[in-house]
Image 1 (cartoon, one colour):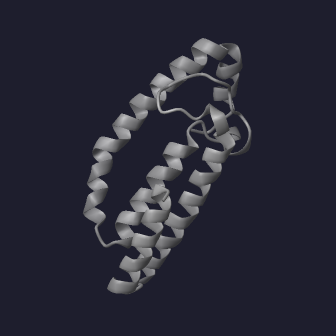
Image 2 (tube, rainbow, N blue to C red):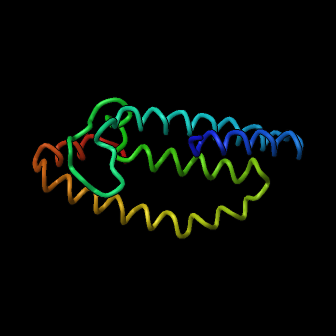
Length: 130
């Protein structure tokens, strides 16, 4: 079962058990939207997705036309919203570790992509938001 689906079910059950406040319902909506965008980013990345930095091909369409790392962005937003849905906003402190780790990872990926695609990658970076 895909990880976002597990979080969706756990979040929904937590909301039902703890009661749907406005904050919890809004966080649930953000969580669902973030994980849908996360899944779309995975599909758009296709066979270029790897666990370790590789440069199979440069993906610049779809969500990647606006964001260099939509999988990290929407995954992080989805997890943060999940913490609010389950009533554990203090878990957001985990992002003090997660965000620097993701920044290091994206920098390593950028070096690999720039090394393989050179000017094409540098031009792409100039036109994307994050």
